[in-house]
Picture 1: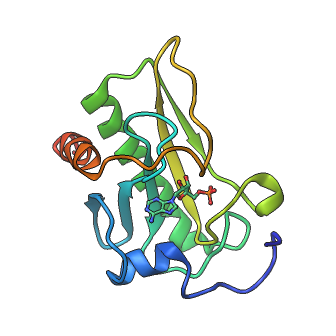
Picture 2: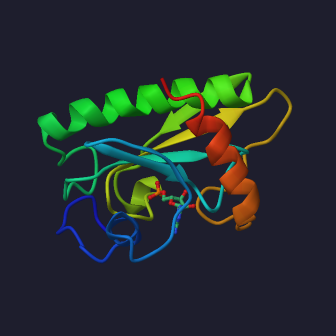
Length: 145
Ligand code: AMP
């Protein structure tokens, strides 16, 4: 998938937003939806997406969508930090397959990091246990302010 192209309404995140595919929800408001990455690169790896946009990446998103989305990313990142007390947090976002993007609905990754703990593989590691993800989502959700 190139950096350009049409939005596919049947991409996995669109299906999650429609409720056609299950997800482990962390938080949502009128603009954003945050949920656990099922192939986490670290404990607490959370994704944040815009609910009402057909942007595939950062380059084609409308400014009025990006503003509440990035503020939502910050809000969820604060909650991840409070809940899991990592030593650091990585926020990533990929544009185009060549850059590592695998799902073409704009999203931000919030990945907690701990000293001495290696980062897992991007979009291809071990599928997480849903009950563990649910527990983490509850912990993070409780810290949203
Ligand atoms: P990217 O490669 O930046 O497009 O990121 C897509 C992310 O979505 C990867 O980290 C995947 O592990 C994650 N992912 C793929 N399918 C699902 C799913 N059904 N639920 C939650 N996360 C997913």
